[in-house]
Length: 233
Image: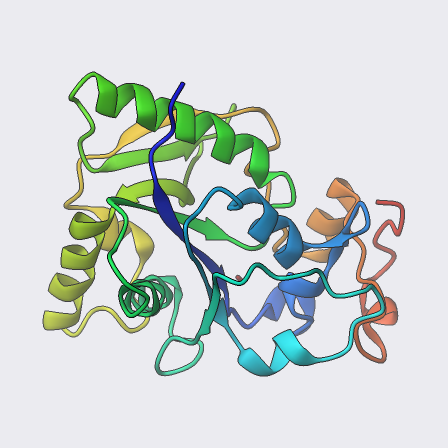
């Protein structure tokens, strides 16, 4: 099946407050950081914008840094820590400066270590929908337990950009919710494989998924609270 051209934005700018401030993007799963896994999940994108603290992307981690694709862009929501809706808007702005926008944009949170499985299913569902001339405004992941994950979805870029502008016009973009941002979009819910949208908000989540703190900065292992080393809140 022919897949559609798309851009991607990865949200990696939260406070990680329930992880004691340890950046989620540098947690480790099966030898890769969560940010590295997210970038790999979006590998089919023409361009990828990572929205987060630029300083954290350059600090030394214990693991070798991945070879970031040349199309990777770094940006930050303004003001910092103003929520995922503002992060999506910042990512779209960054992608818009790099040339012609793709018709669809993948929005992905950085804290889902197995998101690549969801992305593959969503890509196929979007291609079928567009081929049937029923593309709507995109597709969004629905987990096996019925929970919807708006931060794992492909959205029509024009519709998402307009939704950001509308929210900003109401002074509701900063600290606004993603659900409010997407409320006006006609999005198809797509069942995705079990565990593919499981995210890491707490150290209990990390332990359950086999996600480790690593040694990205002094004291992280101690703050892991026993998270299994085997493996935007």
